[in-house]
Image 1 (spheres, helix red, strand yellow):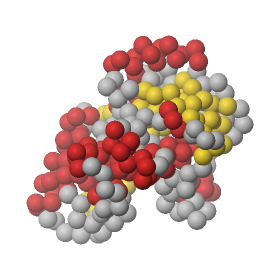
Image 2 (cartoon, protein in one colour; image 1 turned 180 degrees about the vertical axis):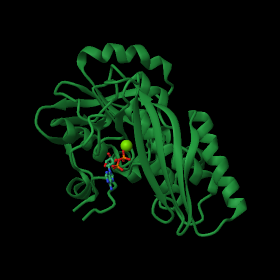
Image 3 (cartoon, protein in one colour; image 1 turned 45 degrees about the vertical axis):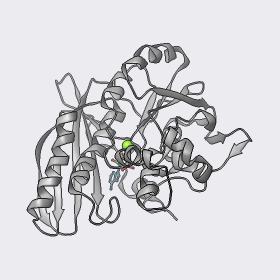
Amino acid sequence: MDEFGLIERYFTRPARHPEAVLGVGDDAALIALPGARAQLAVTTDTLIEGVHFPQGAPGYDVGYKALAVNVSDLAAMGARPLAFLLNLSLPEADPAWLARFRDGLFALADAAALDLIGGDTVRGPLSITITALGTVAPGAALRRNGARPGDRVYVSGLLGEAALGFFTRSGRLALPSVFHEQVLARLDRPFPRIEEGQALVGIASAAIDISDGLVADLGHILKASGVGAELDLRRLPLSEAYDAAFPTVGYDPALVFGDDYELCFTVPPERVKALAGITPRFACGFHDIGGIVAGSGLVLRDGQGVYTPARAGYNHFDG
Ligand code: ADP
Ligand code: MG
């Protein structure tokens, strides 16, 4: 049983309240507040030392990323970030570490405009759980289930940068040193695609953020939408740094590593023009990498033929 099978089997059941518009299974849940002009988007993610970040990781980066991964889920819904709750489990109260953690956390909270409105603090192994809240117009949220055959598949920004950062830091990849800062920054301090997500409302038919890798996360869109997709790997947005690493690493870091926090989304053909209209506003760019097809499953093609990655993507209870 994998992570998602576990959630489906044990923790998915029908909602009691009609206000619970969207529950388990998307980037955020949606709550309709009676009489309100907006819906509440709610999402939560946990970061554990030794699992999501290495022991001794800089407090600043841990604070920044703990909030960034949550805000990224709001972005993937097309929601406007509003506030967050912070649940901290700490082995000890180390003032220097806490100050750095706070600085990283609030750096992103300021950049993404969220207020810290509560939480909980306990003693235990180092772990951070954040619950982020955002708002979205009723019916406007970008869900995973709206992709249809004929839609184009897009990703924002660059893929595989976080993977290159991870391999560089762990010494598994000898990337030219001019690229080190760039790929480590993408690993440690991804900036969630907040404005992009909101601009995609009314344009994208489905969206998700890439936390577990393109193959796994696009896979969630395909499953939720009941469709398949065909991608041309030669169209993946890869950086100069990635080009330098490509002979060693191939396509897989861009496909199955994750941690990029880019958006993957689908656009119906009649809205591709509208997408082109908003694209100049965003430095990251939106890249057409393939199309949605009837059926199920994901087919990847490179210049030679069908390509199969070595693994599917990050999953906490794989195998
Ligand atoms: P994401 O990668 O976007 O953060 P996850 O992979 O963490 O999403 O979770 C997938 C979906 O399952 C989400 O809708 C999440 O809220 C839900 N989920 C995860 N764990 C649980 C749980 N223990 N109980 C209920 N829902 C859960
Ligand atoms: Mg997500």
